[in-house]
Length: 206
Image (cartoon, rainbow, N blue to C red; front, top):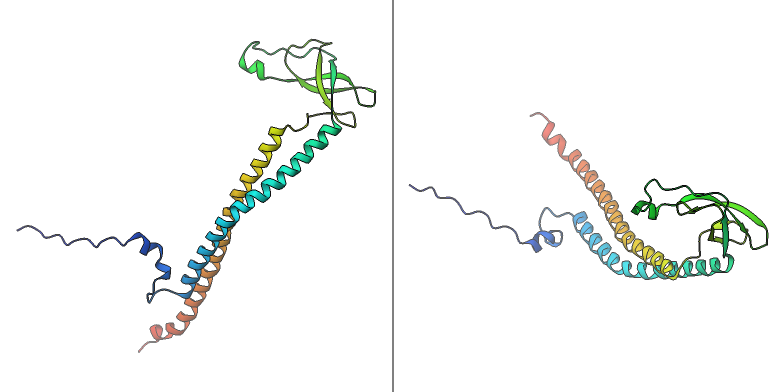
């Protein structure tokens, strides 16, 4: 005789599982409903705040870096410098590494005040003493980086906007986790209170 296999229980629909906190049932606690509404509220807040944070932070960062670039352009000067001694040779001349390698070498240059100075800067390999290179000097006569370019300003602003967009969901997740822990502690406290009332009925001998 063939064995009859009972039909499996149909799986519960995904929307019903997802929205179980809003369905009335005897096991649902007020804290469950509160946790559900907190999650919805934080989700809507994150969706609304993320583009606003990107625009606000990106615009602020763009203005900051643009002003920084303007100040650097006004206070930094491009000038020539002469190598005091030969630059080291790369062990593999002509290789891709040699094309990207830079070595610190002492150079002599004239600062914006007309004074002769020496300092170290990075140069390509195998430059001989007396070779001339271009360097950037600040208002104090120290070697520095060139002013920020338009592309660098834009990329920096975009990077800040992306970081802001990532920070908003992280803060929302942290806030939800904190609220959930507080509600769980509240539930445990209620369990302890209820057990104190019920425990004597289970432990008292008859």
